[in-house]
Length: 325
Image (cartoon, rainbow, N blue to C red):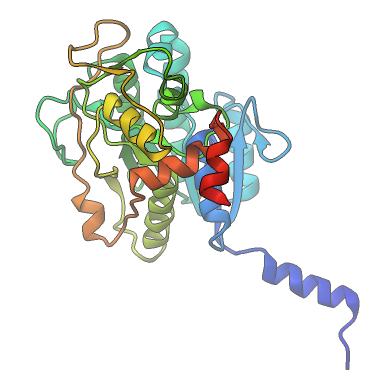
């Protein structure tokens, strides 16, 4: 006997909506988009929230509005919350310290409290900039000593999260890149124009040691951490994740040029400590062995990841024919 159409639809709806729920803040940003995509594509019911760029894909929530935050968490009842929203530009934090502190610290503490209220697992995204970069690599147990206000606000955010929710996780990560909407979205991809316009020499920092990390890899780590936590309540506290290829901005720019068969002779390495803008740590390499011991991790080689991220922004379209056809 055939089921009625209505019953059939109801059954399919049940099957289609995964029972595990995750809420992602900052879902419109570079990292948040990747985190949303990762959970959404792996049998989680994912809801993203953003602010300026939210509609129509995501919920529009001002994280400083504690009532709005309370309401979405109580309406959706997530099992996991991944808190990607932050003011992440060190120079903007220095110029707008109060607004940055509201988002990076106050909103994070409030989110942690709300998560604790419904027993949700919160993953707070933090940064390698909590360290001064004088004695790498850094384990989760090493003493933080941020050099700039951005690092200070993120460290205060960590403390606010763990004070309000002892079962939360803090995930520290370094400089990110990935499939950007605009080149300025990442400190790595923003260099592409300087690389491409080889008629003009460009000074590139060759002092600060960085570990460029693909947002897809961070997203996979967030999901793996969440899934491990669903089986094991002892999964909490501070964790580090990072790419393992050490490069200065000059070396990244040369690698980008090489990936697209572009010249790099116009790029000039600057080995002096930068004098403008917020202070930066020389080498804040993160030791990731704690997550690795849990069997958690994913690493995309830089050249492969950067090629995938940047080819839509290639000015010389002839290259696309040679590579993709």
